[in-house]
View 1 (spheres, rainbow, N blue to C red):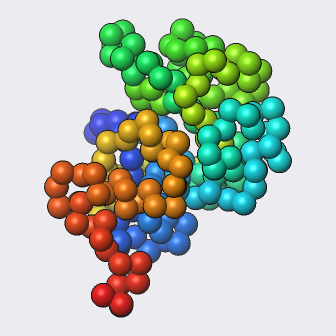
View 2 (view 1 turned 90 degrees about the vertical axis):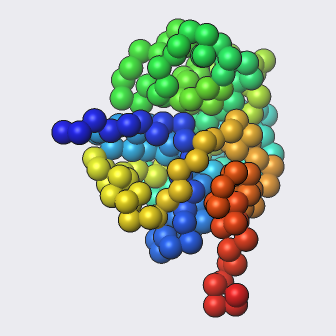
Length: 208
């Protein structure tokens, strides 16, 4: 099998051609990507449900808006915490840390503060079973996601070939965007190529 080049930590930005309503104008942060498949969370699907309604002890650390986000169509009854720890990106570079959230069982216990596992740079996964006090002094931002987006082996690669997604670099601020509903346009607009023009694509092309 051909080795898959990992896109862990990158963003998948839905192209206007993507017709699946689950991913219409979605911005997906990839938490894991290898030959076994891919897993990510949609960063721009806030729900009306407050974090305090389902995870009261984490509500005080959740960034604005303090609501649960729909991370994707898979396992909507499960919760994932994604958080930025300022300063960790530089330290990861110094140590040459392997990118990846430990979702497939890697031992990353010594990589970053207790209760947090690095995904990419300063972005990592939070152990929501741990006491929030462990991370209260180091977290820069926290987002809680219900469900996730998942792809089987080779499935995401097929969608990329079909032109369903743009792949771009993530920034720590994407996780904690205070205006998540406009994240699709904001991510495209910052690209230094023709993708910046896609940000002007109308919501309804028939009106163009």
